[in-house]
Every structure is written in structure tokens, then in C-alpha cells.
Length: 394
Image (cartoon, rainbow, N blue to C red; front, side):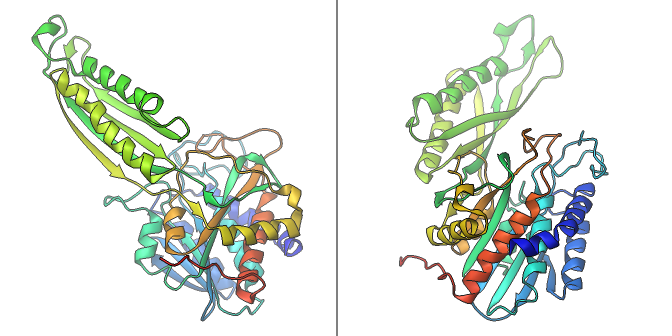
């Protein structure tokens, strides 16, 4: 399969660069979706558009079993600084997380499998909006599920580029592979006054500082040190004049955890920490917006993926999983059907290009690796060379 993937490498690079030059934010991927649909139809693959708002589903074959493969399509609000011919042409937007590569790779899977006449169906999910959510708090994966994209699916596969993993190496292990993510929005209300007479008011900035200290103590003093957890404040807004103590402070942040037990504990501890504001004479409002759960890779799917990697590239190319606290809404797809996501080495040379940074880039030779692994894993499931995963009885 890898030799066949190498034969389409130039086309995959061209597709990736086209998408990279024209980045689009979540649920606005109209041009990308059109490119995907047009490419699928040129390949003779039936394409359904408008799935999950701006998503596309490609259908190879009919009947069962059904193996779904997913790629996300959205970009990030960053200004690219890379001086390359394929740099973003859209001011303030860039593909800084590799979703351009994911999309090109999945189109490559369509190219590799379209003529094999496999039993059952390969379902190609080109998903919008992995990086954020709509006004109702729903990401692209949830919207696609609502539109029936996962109906009848027996297994779901995906990958993510790894900017710190050398090209030609891979990570895939069973169990928890990403963090659950929640977002908090808080307002601390005091009593504004003249900066010369702080005793006449209730300083919400001073009080917010005490709340932040309490928040920083949660992970180090309230959570089991053997249980990963993160609380990070991403924005604080207060005041407009240097000599006026403001009426209120707004602060927002992110909460990350790897288990549902710790997730619940973080929520309760957060509420306790904001109680400091009340103790110091202010009032507060706290809202926690629950995000996606952790990606949990199915052990049976992982076993097949690992065997595919070993057969195509050698078992020595499989490296131990390095756990991180990033989040992925692929978790929702992997709850709908047994699934697994593997990490694809894409580090260009010896220089790591951090994801979600304005200098992010990747080694395009990795595109063929990704397409080959996804295509071969799907092929083995559909032909019966590998047994389909079974959900444990409830």
C-alpha cells in the first residue's frame, strides 16, 4: 500500500498546499469543502455535502461492514510568518495544526481504495470545526453525528500530525490519548472607586489576584499528584483608566483532565476557589462550559493499526505514546463507534515546528505514510483479514 501511496505523493502535496494557502475557520470551510467534494467526484466517489453544516462525507462502496475515516478541515486565527511559496494567502488565518495535511491524506485514501472493490463501505468524513464550537457549544464532530455521518459505522479511524515526532515514526496505543477540555467564564464584581481612595470601594482586581492564587493551588494541593490536570487562565479584562479602580473583572480559562473523576473534582474545586471573592466582599458569577471528553482508543482497533505499521514500515517505527493535555473532538466519534487515532511523525528535519504557532509547518513526505496506514487498516477490516472490533456488553 505504501508503494501505491508514493505514486500519488505529488498530488497529495499539491492538495495540501492548495488548502494551506486558503485557510478557513470552523463552520466556514466552504472553499475547502468544495475542493474536497470536487476531488471525490472526479475520483468517482459519491459525495454528500452540507453534513454538520460545512462537512463532506464520501462513500466508497455500499452495505456493511462500514469503516469510517475522519479528517478535520478548519484553520486557526493566526498570521503565518513562514516564507514559503504555499504560505497562507488569507490575512490573519493559517493552517497551524495540520488539518490541511489531514484533509489531503484522506483524499489520498480515496485514491488508494477506489478501485479495490472492497466488501462493505469506506466512509470518508471530512469534518468542519474541530478547533472550536458553534454558539450552541457543539463542535464539528457532534454536528456530523447529528446529521447521521456515523450511522451504522463499525469502526472509525483517524490520525493527527506530530510536530515533535520524526517523519517515518508513529505513536498509537490503547486507552486515553487526549484530555477532556472544559472552559470557564467568570465575573468578579466589586465596588469601583477612585484609585486614590481604595478604602472607599471593593477592589475586584486585588480580589481576582487572590482567586488566581486559589486556582493555582487546585492542581498542586487538591488533585492527586498522579492524576494529570491543568487549569490555565487565558484572558483577564478589567478597567479603562489608570486612576480608577474598576467595578468588575472578567476572566476566562481552560480546564484539562484525563479522567472523568478528576474532571468532576476540578469543577467543584473551581467553584470553591471563586468563593474567595465572596469572602473578600465581592460577588461572582461562574459558568463552566463542558467541552469534549478524552479520546479513548479502542484496544482492538489499535492492535490492527499497530500491525499495519509493523508490516509496512517495521515494528521499530512504533514509539511509546507521549501523553499530552491537548483535546480532540474525535473523542465523540470514538464514543459512537470503536475507534482509534494515531500520531503521524511530521517533524521537518531536526526542527520542531510547534502546533498552534505562526511558524508551524510539516514534512510533506509524511502524507504518503498517513494515507497508506489509514487505507490499509480500513482494507483489512473490510476484507476480514482483521476482525472488526466488538463493543463489550453493557
